[in-house]
Structures are given as structure tokens and as C-alpha cells.
Length: 234
Image (tube, rainbow, N blue to C red):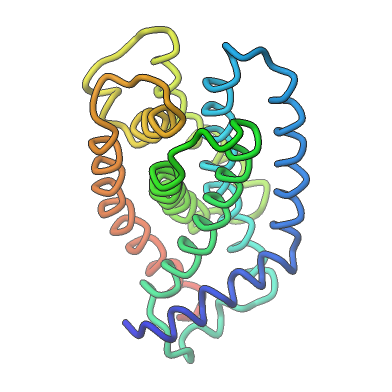
């Protein structure tokens, strides 16, 4: 893996995201969320902030990576993959890092403005970056088998709900080890800890769990992406 080539690919993907309005869209959405959160009473502000960051910025990579891949496919870019020096892993990492950075910036902006700086920024950045990376990798695995935009959304909506919904059980005081070890739950716990809400274990464990989940997610996405590239002409 070539570090400089990977960096150039990440910057290229970020420019691509700017070109197609990803940054503009999330700038507008962030302002909308901030406006809504300012209307909430103090006792709801922190848990709702965590829930919004969990359900949108943190999970945006799951849907946005599908959009990126489908846009690139529509432009015929993937058919040229065979003549490019980059590897499948570099292709994946550039997408994951660029989208996870966008997710993290949006999360920090929302929390920093609404909570008036009372945030563990490093803890939130690490949790959102790792969580967004996992969701983006799962989104990448799904989009590689989608035949069209409509097909992608038919596949991605139930998969996204399956990934995220179990974590919401903790709001109903329902907890189990099988729920707690899921990446979505680890992310939500990490977000709670970063804004001063109590969680049942050390916040470092939630970060460790998220980082561990990145490895199988990356291996699975790599396998699916390699098959996809072979079909696309790579």
C-alpha cells in the first residue's frame, strides 16, 4: 500500500463529494439540526443530541458510499480500474476515510455548537470516525450487489435498520451482552460518554469494541468489492 497514493485518492474523493454536494447538503442539515436542538429543554438536550448524531452523521456513510459508488459507476469509472495502480484496499480506504472525516466534522459541529463546548471532542471524534467507518464498509458491501439506485435503496434500508435498530433498545432500559457488543450500541454508548451521559462501562471499552469491529467489516467489504471490480472490468 502506497501512503502518498492513498492520500491523493482520499483528497480526490473529498473533491468528488464537494462536487456532488455532499458537504453542502450536510452543512444545511447540520444547521437544521442545530436549530431544532436549541428548542429542546435542558433535560432532553444531551440524549437527543447523541441520538441525532448516531442516526444521521454517524450513519451517513452507509447511504452516501452507495451514492458515490453508483455515481462513479454511472460515469463508467470502474471499468478503468484494471489500468490504475491503486489496489482494492486503497480504493476502499479512500472512500471510508473521506466519508468518516465528513461524519466526524458534522458530529463535532453539532455537538460543539449546541452543547456550548461541554464535549469530549477526542472521544466523540474517535467514536464517530470508527462507527461511520463500519457503517460505510457495510454500505459498500451492499452497493456492490445492487443493480441500480432503486435496487440499492431496497437493499440498504432493511440492512441499515437491522444494523442500527437494536441499539435503540437501551433507551427502553433493555440491555444484553449480545446487544452491547453490536457496533451500533458501542457507538451510541461512546457518544453518550463523550457528552457526559452515564454509560454502564468505561468509554474506552466502547472505542475498543468499535475498532475491533472495523477489521471484519473491512475484510468483508474487501471481498465483496474485489468481486465487484472483477465484474466491472478490474
